[in-house]
Length: 356
Length: 252
Image (tube, rainbow over all chains, first blue to last red; front, side, top):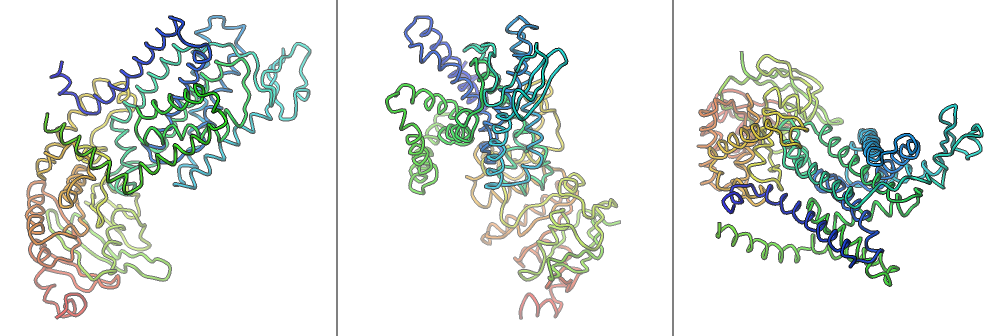
């Protein structure tokens, strides 16, 4: 066994540890839930925890692995949520097997988010740094606001669209409003469970970790580290930037599906799909360490659970985030902190090498 | 027919003619030097040859194929690889992965095969590992294979850049000041290495260099640039004894 472990590359070992932590955490939570030693409040947080982890890991693909700052991640989540909730509501009476309907909704959420990822990515990825951040931020806001003026209804004549109000849909008396502007979509089946969320996390990790450790992942990281050199060895910059961005968008879409099917009413507000949310996902990524997938997971868990556990401090939640961000920035970038880290981490590494 | 045939190459930035009427013809397996004072346009020539800039006049033929104005990726695929004056490694990738990135266009499997770890992924990755380790051995870097490229000592970083360029299996290798920042000992080692690369890989090499010991030691022919114009061209010793070159660049 130890021989096998030694033979495995450092990356494979790291990936296995990450899977192990996620699976162990799931088993522990399941045991605690079935033993009834967890408050219903905390139990209700399990699905949100799952989609926050997926969001953090998928954003890390763009921020940490591709090295581009995206502030519109909640926008892709919003697209996944609304497209899948729309489907589920339409099909509620047609497909009665919950799991089949959910899987189809999941597929639709992922595909629609991925399509938007490509459409947004093609023009936006020509930009760099701050400019890219600003445009993706605007994209997230535009999506949220568009959804708020969207009215879609269905009657015997088919679908009706409007951007004015529900009356403007001009439906037959048998018509049903599906998307009702700022009131969003009501009556989405609650199909998302902790188990489904857990499986989605594993799939997300599988895709992201295996991508990073493949030929394409190397190409993506080489663009991050030095675009000019990557181009000089024949790596197609546009293709790989778009690939990372689209996969990230698709996974955010999956998180959106989970979000939509965990609530009976889906509305687009500043808090769930606005820039607040995008920034919070970014905080998970920064706190966990840019480019560190396992760190993203741990940060997402801590920052989701902490405010709920310290409910009395809820008003200070954003304050805590800000302080944590500043501390992390200092830890990551201040020369003194780097020096301290280098000395201690190097020392640790050397010791390990000597043992091997 | 020469491997690289450049005729009347030129580019202007605004009103400045950075390179004008540049001709060069390099035979297979030749070691060719491009020298000249700072700002003469040497690196601009490299950028024109590799598609970083598009020339506004002239023609570039590589192995009889017209590559004038092509994109960097296409030129890399056509067979020109380069190193950079200020080292450009993939710093957060391991030394091994830097070379494997260079193998990108020579070893293929699809994204899906990579994510699902299908048999082809395993087979091709193994091939890439072996090939990359072979290259690292040539440059005496195999013991550093698994550390981050950023943590390599300076001299080794230069070597790794050459290894990465060779991984793309080029026909022509462009070295931009390979000896910059090296002490005489290291420069000596570098000269041996460049000669070795030429023999071992049957490589044609065009290099920019300021170190005259290196240039006169290994280059067979030289072109001297001054203010974007060609000042002299020919056999190394003839060019270095040319009175015009001595006045403009070498000094008395």
